Length: 417
Image (cartoon, rainbow, N blue to C red; front, side):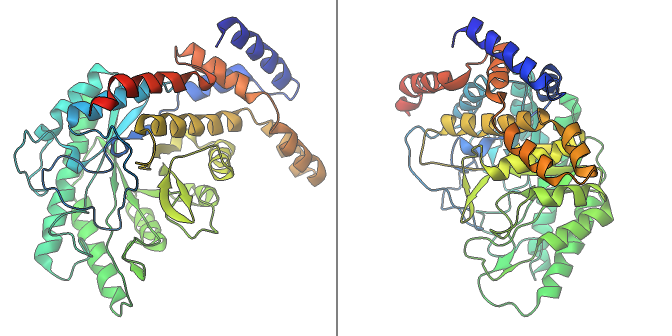
C-alpha cells in the first residue's frame, strides 16, 4: 500500500478521533506494548516431536489436511518467523511440552528437562521473542481419560512429576529471557458417560495441584485452565470453571479463560472484571468456537471485540496475558496465524480508540440513548486507517498486502514439504 496514502488517512483519522476526545497516537503507543503469545501448535496440528506417533487423544482433534504442515523443529521455527514478520509488534511464543528438542531420542514426559528446550530459548533470544509454556497431558499411553485426577496414585504421580518439570522449564525460560513465562496447566480429565464419584476425582485433582504448586518458582506466572467438556468426555470434566476459579483464588495463581471452553450462550468477556477483583492477573486463550470448542481461526467478530473492550474498559491491559489458541489444518497455516493475530490486535485497537470518557459520562448521567448511539457510531470511525499506519510503523505489510507474502512463502517453502 502507498505509504503516503496510509499516512494521509492516518492523519485524517487522528483528527476525527480527536473530535471525540480520543488520542489515536496514544492508542497506538498502547497497542505497541501488547505482546500476543503465538501458539506453536498451529504449525503442525498439535503433533509435537516425541516420536511416539499415534492419534491425538484427550478431547483434542485437528481437522483438515492442507499441505505444508511443519514436520520438525526447524520448520516450526521457520513458520513462526514468517508469521511474526507479518504481525506488527513484538510477540511471544507459547510451547507445549511435546515440542522439545529431543534429538530423536525417546524422552518420556516425566523426564523432560530445561536442556530439551535450550535451543528454543536460544532461538527466542535471536529473534527478540519471549516464551511461554504448557504441560501436555493428552496423547500419551498414561493419559487415558484421567491424569491428575486418576484413581491410581502412580498415574497421578507420573503427571505430577511431568507438570513440576514443565514449570521448571518455564522458570528457566523466564530466567534466561528476562521475562516471566506463563505456564498454563490444563488436563483433559473427565468421563464420556455418567460419573458417580465426582467429589473423589476433584479431591484427587486438588491434591495433585497442591503438590505441583508446592514447588515455588520465581520466573513463572502460573495459570490453570478450565473447560466445559472434551470430545469423548462429554458428561463430566473434573477441572470445571468453578473448580479452577476457586483454586486460583485460594492459591494466588491465574485463571485461564479460553473462549471456546464455556457454554455456547456464555460470553468470556463478562468473566474478566469479576476475576480481576480476586486475582492479580489472568490468562486468555483467544479462539473462535463454532457451535463449541472447535478452535477456528480468530476473526474480528463480536466475541473478540467484546473481550478487547472489557480488558481496556477495566484498565486491565497490564493484568491480562493474551495468548492465541486454535489449530486449523484446513487452510494455509501461516495465513491462519496472521489472520488471527491481526484480528486480535484490531479488536484491541478499536477498544483503545473507544470514546470511553464520553460513554462513561452518558452512563453516569443515565443517558442510555446517547450511550447506545455513540457505541454504534464508534463502530464506523476510521480505526482501520490507524491500524494500517501501525503496520507501516512496524515495517509490516498493511491491509491485504500480507496475502501475497504468504502465497510466496507457500510457493517457495511450504509446497516442498
